[in-house]
Length: 146
Ligand SMILES: [Ca+2]
Image (cartoon, rainbow, N blue to C red; front, top):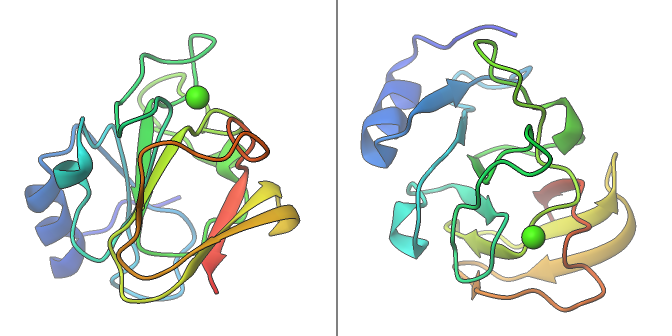
């Protein structure tokens, strides 16, 4: 894992006023992910996919003392359990998401399991879901553009 020094990542950081920035293995220089994006639909950075552990785009306190309360990315994430902030014990955001927002012009699919497997929840461009259907609530483990 390496910290980006790219221009786009810095802009995303400023736009989100984030408290943490992580980079996962990137296929493009502008790929970026943020943790602790804050409360509210307006906290999701432009061109990002955002997830919150509570409904109504509320960033929950760390679940089980470790899982993130919110997360955003502009790239596919195949295993939300592997997300980490190096300076702490934070351990990803698997199986806690209760609201999502697609701040991109593409459809996005969320999955029950890692590796884009299991039940699929597809949302359209720019869609906001303050609550998730019960069959996918607290179950999302990966997501991608689709
Ligand atoms: Ca939840």
